[in-house]
Length: 163
Image: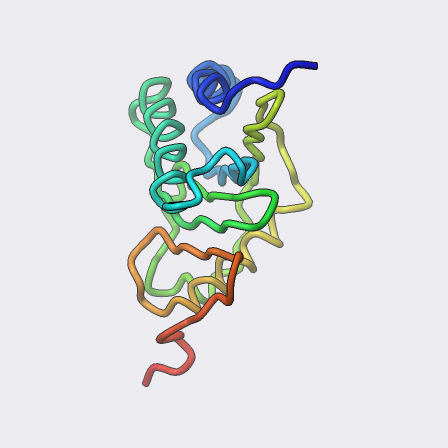
C-alpha cells in the first residue's frame, strides 16, 4: 500500500472537517489531533504542529464561520504527536483550567495513512484531566501549552507553587 505524503494528508483536512461539522451541532467539542511525529519538522516541532493546527482551524472557520476555536496544547512523543483544539467551549476559563475536570466530547482527528475523524468517548475525562495537569505544570504560560517528550519536560513555574 502506497503511503501518502504529509502534504496530501493536510490537503484532505478541509473536506474531513467540513463533512464532520455538517453532522454536528454547535455544542462544545474537543478535537484531539493525532499525527505521526515523523511528518513534523524535527528542528521546530512547535512551528510544524502549529501549521497543522492552523490548517484545521482555517477549515473549521471556512465550514462554520461562527465557530469559536482555541488551540490549547500540543505534545510531541517519539511516534505520535498530538494537539488539542477546542470548538465552541465557551466555559473554558484559563485562570481555573488547572482545576477544571469537566469532560468535553472528544473527537480524534487522525492524520495518518487514512485521515479521518471519529468520536472517542473514552477520552473525554482522560483528556480533561491531562489538560488540567498541563495547566498546573505550565503555570500561567500562554496558550498553546507545549511539551516535547523527546527529553525531560520541565515546568518552570507550576500553578501549585505560586502564592
